[in-house]
Length: 362
Image (cartoon, rainbow, N blue to C red; front, side, top):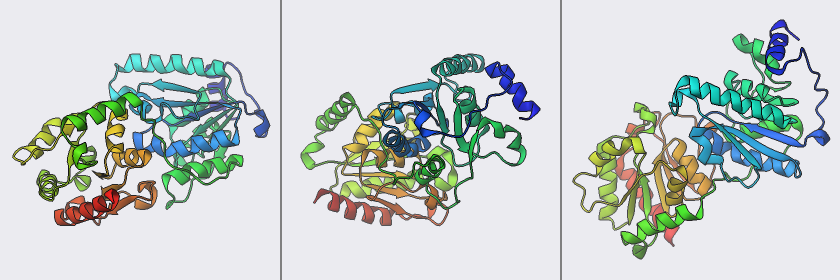
């Protein structure tokens, strides 16, 4: 072991070194899944959680995520426990309190005596590798550290080579699992949609008389993390909504809570104004998407929510790699833009929505 690794072992685990020995699946009784990035990333990890359960049917399986993504994985049928911590940058709490909460949580995790921690990212992340290491798990699987981060390599004692660049994120997770001889075909994404959330969304549709005309087309107006090349203009969204309304399609508009004033600008002057739903609850958002005959959105986390609840989709695509991030669904249609979503024409989207909505309702 390097001096750095010995020092870290002494500081955090109060020992100089520990030989985990060769990986032995028969010794794995407790597993920790670590994923500390964004909603879409966590949803793309849910098939791997199922694969772990199939490979280790009697194991206790837990997950560690940040508060931003808690709703994305909470209720997964193959999880026995969920640990959540606030990231300081998300400003749920102040920086000091956020770090104190995380330190206490890591102390709890060490007492759990996990046998295996799996850190699901396709590239080495120092913060995620630290979480896996700090958990005290006997074996720690993650993408190998390299370059300037090679000194952190001891965080994983089951290091894996990075997956190929054209591999989908779901398959990247399974690339890691192959290192421990879990080699199965990925299944669907999973998002638990609670009954109360579904009931609330059905009531909203009934209150607006939507269900009388059949399931709606749910249009998610979004600025896609405010990236210009991934953001359709207000004028385009407005024209899309007006065009679909004129063709007699029942509509519901959704948007992120932070985009409320922006979305109101899009809806101003529309005749008729479609029902609008927004919520801070990812579960409620997923419930609304699941009740649509079709879900229309720009690329980003929302398309993974759509895929997880099984609704057919039309996705406006900017510049993100399709190979890596296209919706993990056979019922999703991607409209490509050549790198800038502004290149997508409203009439082309209206045509695609009408054709797919009719197919979905037949």
